[in-house]
Image (cartoon, rainbow, N blue to C red; front, top):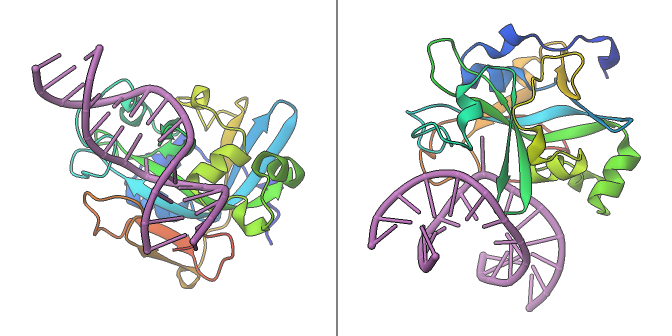
Length: 201
DNA sequence: CACCCGATTATCT
DNA sequence: GATAATCGGGTGT
């Protein structure tokens, strides 16, 4: 296991590249949330890319609106949305300079710090159920809709991502995205192989 | 204002 | 495998 505490916060330039590439390279990085005085963190093991107007599954497939405007804004900011009226999902805005919109959904991670807090938030028996889904991460980390739009590259902020060494391509793969009906065939989901924290599909 | 529906999850059978 | 829970965005009247 790497010593992630020595790693630096990902810079804005990391997110100013093709959305699908950023989704791939976010595997292994560490999501951190400062919740009151608690530092909650986890290693990202599953992501999905959502692009702009060519990607009908994306919230940014059509016009800019009140909800999706963050996806059109500066890269490196958090796009948080409520799904099915129940769950908050965490994305990072990422796109190439010429693209209009794009974000990476963080779908699953391995808890690293404040595991007792995460267990209290989630109240489940099996540890692999703590954070193996996008809505589960939102609940586990205490994320709310108020967090949408925050700059995740700001050291003074309460939500950011730490760098980590790049993974070997032998250790992860891609697949179709989960839970969508439009533009279903592109291989824009990335996950670490043989990892117990990846969602079960 | 009414309607439809979704980047999900927990809890059944 | 099927389904309820629950709410706000988007669309059209």
